[in-house]
Image (cartoon, rainbow, N blue to C red; front, top):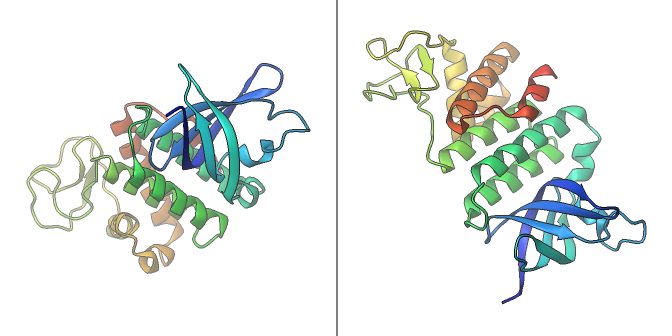
Length: 243
């Protein structure tokens, strides 16, 4: 069929010509899709404002050879509005969107779990339910877990020895016992390892009650783990760390 409809999150947009935009979407059923939205930069556009980053939409598209074409858009959740007015929320959401784009790079490969995870994280950001840094780190850990790269936060990632352990190595898969610990491994505080486990499993009472120094240390470990497995740095993550 030439026409199809799906729910989607707007990951990013790029200008095209004088009035069009290329929209990168993470859809619920069709994976990552790139489409042209014609005329959306004109003031007379009927759905230009509905195609802003971080919005959750119901979209109808027309199959194309290289790019699909957006034909109809309805807003489901305008998360971009509350997120866009706060720098911390915006940079966290941008890092989430870039991560989602990297993890679903194969276009049109269904990724419903990644879609639902991103929608939930954007909702948590927009409602300010938890600190933005906690929501971001929790999302990154869970997105990696869905992709098959879940870190070990308790037992040794190499030999399986019961934890807790005092070493963390991104390349080796997370927590390391004293026997398996590679040179150069980090030695985070026990509270930081507990926080990582809470963020991965969704224990928000533990995460919300954590100290700032343990959150900062956990963020550094999450960033290292993410970028090791993606095999590239995320530009947006550097802005979050500066904030």
